[in-house]
Length: 402
Image (cartoon, rainbow, N blue to C red; front, side):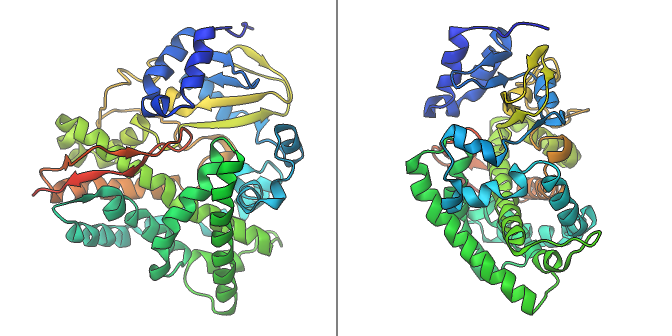
């Protein structure tokens, strides 16, 4: 066993990561943390890890899980059921542990299969082509492409009517603020957004019960495994989770990836030659999900440090993705990088269910974008989302030149 490093500088770095300046440039701070305090106890008592091996251990260790709901009172969230934003979050598969998580994952996996995702490739290619046709010579990449691609793909998969999809971007963005620091101000915005999402999906689910369609919501209504079915509340939270995760993460993946490509124009030929490897590298290089947290159920060890039951552990996935112990020259974008193993989709039993869909969209979208436009350039200063957990942009002005 090793001792936890006590470092005033490390605490300062962690504090900086909660600021707008730190969120603009987290990677230099991650590098310094890996160097001076790869396992450090934050001021709130959580253990923070930044090395790839330690982050991978956190996401895969069965002795670590999500904070159980009965413990939320200890962090000031005892009234979580009264808040629509927290109720949707804390009753979803995203925050549950076995056996509840195991049961829900088994049920949804029956319908949300890799085969169903691969069947979407022609539709994704068609959608990408249509959106590229509509892009002006200059415009916002987020609203013109990075949002419409995933929201229409996941909307088509779930069965959300095309005319309703655009309204969800601000609603999901406001709701997912609760993935960062939860404050009364955050809840004042997140709660009404979550309530609108809940009410819309409740109505859509009831319509699918009456008139099933060839979509995922209809499949989830009908799914049964080992005599088990989703309850109405479970179906609602599952639909909300899949819809939110289906476009929020991928929107940021596409935007972060484009900025990385424009900053590294010498890598563009590799994008066409190795689209699958390129997508994986873009996911690693500037991950749309930067961190996750777990709570210890049983004694375990992470990074040589003893973890006791009740300890909270935060894994900075974005830091692990830039660890030189795992990746050669990790600060360099290398679209032909072999043996890539980004942590962006988590791991273990909580590995992101939508990872194949996000990869498919990236593999189709980036090569098509670069084939169509030979002179892509930033047309102004991007506006970054002020969040550490979800890294992305709210506006990305681009010139689309042929």
